[in-house]
Length: 100
Image 1 (cartoon, rainbow, N blue to C red):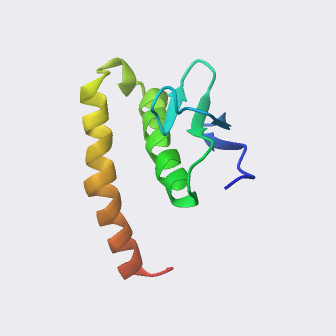
Image 2: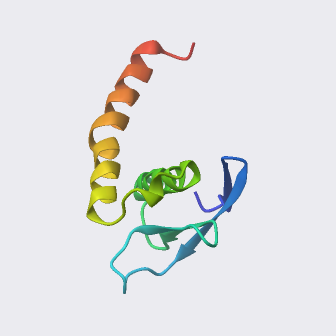
């Protein structure tokens, strides 16, 4: 977790930075101008992974152009749908399919 400094998405390098986000009250953020995902510096490995995936979903919407359609609570609701329904369902299916 600590060694992850960047990822590749849509052919772009996205920086992963750890910051103190306690004042903002956030676990993480996606910055489309800097191509940066920030994650609170003091989180467990599980929270890090969950937050990274959440912010990567925001980044994916940006790279696909969907971020221009809506922002704010509507966007968070869409991300929550994936986090609460799609990804857990997919992980269960993936376990059933095995490593083929």
